[in-house]
Image 1 (cartoon, rainbow, N blue to C red):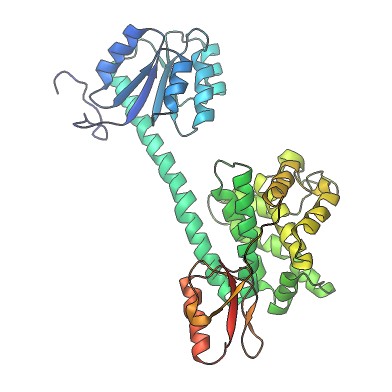
Image 2 (cartoon, rainbow, N blue to C red):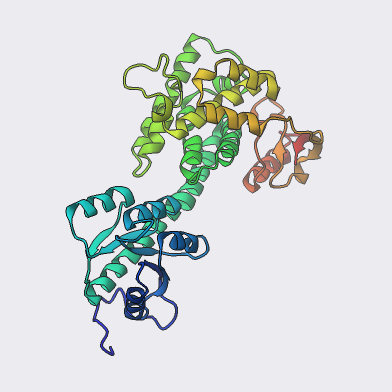
Length: 393
């Protein structure tokens, strides 16, 4: 192999661009030698300072960063901690001639590095460690993509399927999820999928509620004592169902604590408050209460005023984001009537759709999908749905 070290078959010399890595050292000669050793396997970027490297990361995709520890202005541990803040998926390796324990501890604590290697590092060892680091990066990204995309879409399909028998539940879930999506965007949450999944799965336990109770909840009407008891069990049931799913432990935790107050008043023993509450729980409380208020008042500003009157229940930043999202009530065209056979995907149902016998089929706020169109057309074909439907969008 022309003198190149023989490695595990997982990593072989590249005929085209290899995985991109970044080498950081204040000595240009060392960078040049490392580049020559590594370029048969990797696309190698270099920087002679932490500041230069951070600037490069803004424009270049990188899987692994290898940094020297002893550098002027910004040492390797500090630099790698900045890399972690910039992109926690980048795998971080520290390469240094100073192998004392204090250096290692600082690097691990501040930069949460993947490997700590000492100079001089044999080429075959460095290449092998980089190959392992690239594979770690690939697995981390693959898992996140699975959670972010596949799981989110699966949960959405599951929620929609379970809710076909409970149209009011589906409509409520869609409205709350829409509010949550607005909040995570306003708060600039970096990984919103977990919170959005939380908002979808929190309704699982509600499938146990009778349609009459769901109709009351959807309309904001008061529940009697028995109905309140049934509703009080929904959160715990949803939490327990989700808690059995691997990798969704934090989602289950957020669901279980969604009624906890931010100021901690009345939370009970063992229930956190403030920043110790999962962000998903804080966002979900504001979204659920806002939707419930809108069911009663149908006025954005009146509903927000009620939430502000009990501000201690909410994370101030979440409440402020909610206010920003609805600072000015949108001036939109009024809902328009359409025939069932003229429905299109993406339209929003403005009023509840009920059969001729009074059975609720679709709740207000539901976004029209292809499956929903087929369902309504089937009812219309049997004469169970007639007249026009008011929609927005």
